[in-house]
Image 1: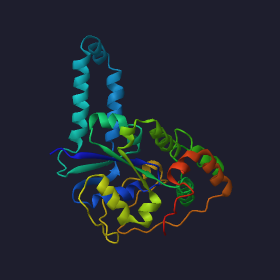
Image 2 (image 1 turned 90 degrees about the vertical axis):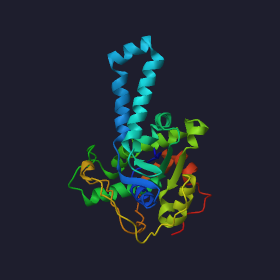
Image 3 (image 1 turned 180 degrees about the vertical axis):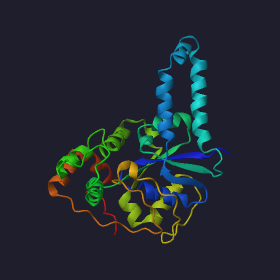
Image 4 (image 1 turned 90 degrees about the horizontal axis):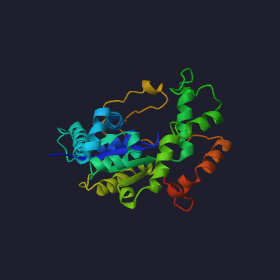
Length: 278
C-alpha cells in the first residue's frame, strides 16, 4: 500500500518538531520527526535534469515521452522513499515544502501540507535567547557580530532563516484556491494552549480516525542534529508539553517586525481574534 503524503513546513521556532512528535502518536501515521532530505533531493533532481544536454535534446524530438519518463521517475522517487513504512500516511518535515507545494502536488496529488506559524516577535525572541545561551558560537550565516536590531533585520531578510519561509508563506496568497485548500496552518500558541483540541481538528482535516493524545506521556523519537546550525535552533522533544515563557522583545524591534509584516498579523493574529488561553 502506498501511503498518503503529508508535508510539514513553516516558520522556524514555531513548533514543527513538536507537531511531528504529536503526529507520530497516531497509529495510522509514520512520522520520523527529523528534517527530511526528500524535498531537497527532488529539487536537486529537477535542477540537474533541466541542465542535462541529453535530456534536453530528447525534449526537442519526443517531448511527451521524455517528460513522461521524468514524471514517472520523480514520482517513483518520492513514493519509494517511504514505500515500506506500513502506515496509512507518512509525515515528511522540510521547510522547503512550502515553496515546492505545487511540485509536490504534481507528484503526489493527494498530498497535504501543514504549515507551522508563531507570533513573529516570539520567533525572533526564541532565536535571540538561544544565541545568548550560546554566544561564543557564531551562526551558520555569521550573524553574531551584529547588534540585536541588526541581527533581527538579517534574520528577516528574504533569503534568511525567518524571512525565507515568511516570504514563502506570503506567496501562498498567489496560489490557486485549490492549492491553498491543501494547506493547513497551525499556530504555535494554539498547539501549546490546547494541544488535544488542536490535534483533533488536524486529524479530522487529514481524514484520520479520531485519536486522543496523552500530552503528559508522549513518545520521544530520535533527536535531530543541532550542531549543523551551530546550536542556534534546537529541535528537542519532551515527554510532556510545557508552554515556554514569553520572550521580552525590545519595543523598537517588535514595532519594526509588526510594521514590516502587517499582512502576517492580519491573516494569523488579527487583533479582533480571541487570544490563546494560557
